[in-house]
Image 1 (cartoon, rainbow, N blue to C red):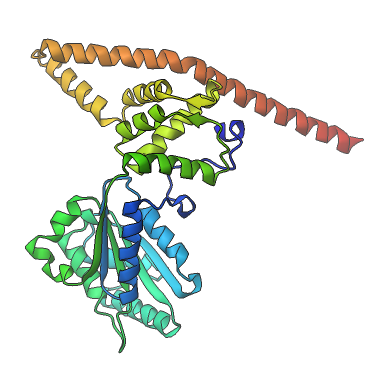
Image 2: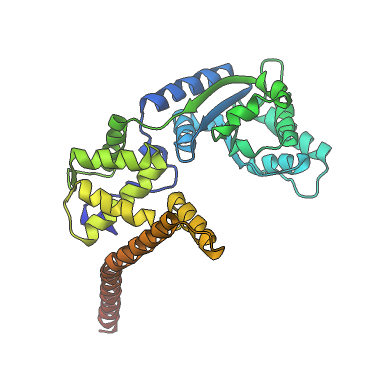
Length: 344
């Protein structure tokens, strides 16, 4: 909606990972170097960890974009609590292979034949496992066993494990010793620094044709970094709401006040952990008759903040509905005009 207002070619802060928006921060560049090194070895496991929304998936997709597409067969698996056979079925399905109703031995045979054929054609097979911290021990063992598929020169498949920070601790457990021995490269992706946060925002805006409208002052960038902690996904969410505010209130410049207004709105929403924990804990204490004066005051303040946020949003919602209805009316008029032209 705000794209047309600011003359953007697309939304600059979408949540879906898109390699077009890859920003080469110091950490991301170093991670890319580790990935390149791991790929050059052509075998084993590559481990990338980072906070939720740190950019792990975007990093890997950017890497794939740099590889020769015709030499790459990549599949992605979002791990859950799968048993051994379900893990194999999910891997087979990710590569587009038959997997329903097959025995484990048949699944393994299909996978080995597929990977062998790919290697003979000069193709590289990569399996990307997201949310690796959720892998069960049996699932890990199945993935490790797949790395045993080899020809005379190298392994037939290479696996990327993307996980949250706790996955590093899981890897250190005694049960993971055999997997650790197969890890050829690993890197932990940290948050963006204050300067990198500014660079990240400006980079994404420039990617969609930003020409300086809207402008941001230094205090706005500082406030955005403080609230998001330099986590890219949090930056995307906050900046997207900031631009929506700018469109609805017809702003061409953002300062600390505008960022604070958006942050205040975000903090009242259910998805914000701080608000949820305070409100739930306070409500629980009140229901049990043990709420302290401080807890009661916190809950009252939160409810007042919600009320203020709703009051601020009502005019904005009305404006959105008006814009949509006007656009719909314009489309209807155009359709009627076209109909009359055809009739004549």
